[in-house]
Length: 168
Image (cartoon, rainbow, N blue to C red; front, side):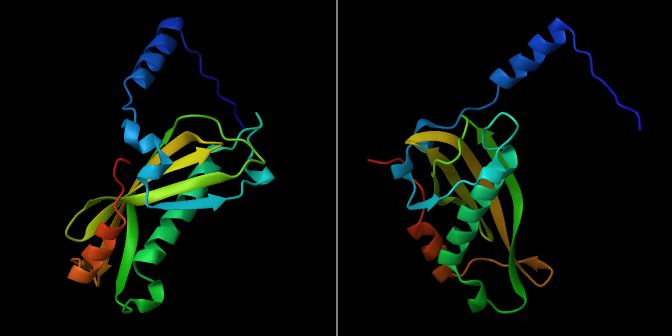
C-alpha cells in the first residue's frame, strides 16, 4: 500500500485560505433559534468526537438529518402516503460555523425555506450553549411513480405553516 503526501507551497496555502474567505456566510437571521418554528433538543454522544475532542462533521450531518426527518414527519407521516409516493433528499449543504462539544446538548432548529411545485427547502441551524455552530440547507423532492408529485393544496399549507423567517 502506497502512502501519498501532498506538499503545498505558501502561495498555494494562501490561495486556499482566500477561497475559504469567499464562501457565503449565512444571513444574520439564520443565526437566531427564534427564527425557526421547530427547535428540537438532542443529546450529543461521546462516539461523535473527532481526535481533537470536537463533534465531527458526520455528527453534524446526522444531527441535521434527525431534525430534517422529524420535520418531514410533522408535515406528513409516512404511513399516510400512498405506496407510489415518496420523498427524497436531492441536495444538502452544511456550513460549519463553530466547534461543537460533548457532553453539551444541541438544539436542531428547523423550518421550511422556499417551496416549489413539487419540492421544498428545509433550512436549519445547530445551536449549542446559545451559539449557532452550523447551518444546513436541504432540498426535498416529492415523487410519484417515475416523475414529480406536485403539492396538493393541503401539503402546500402544511409547508407554509412551518416556514422559517426572521424573528421579530
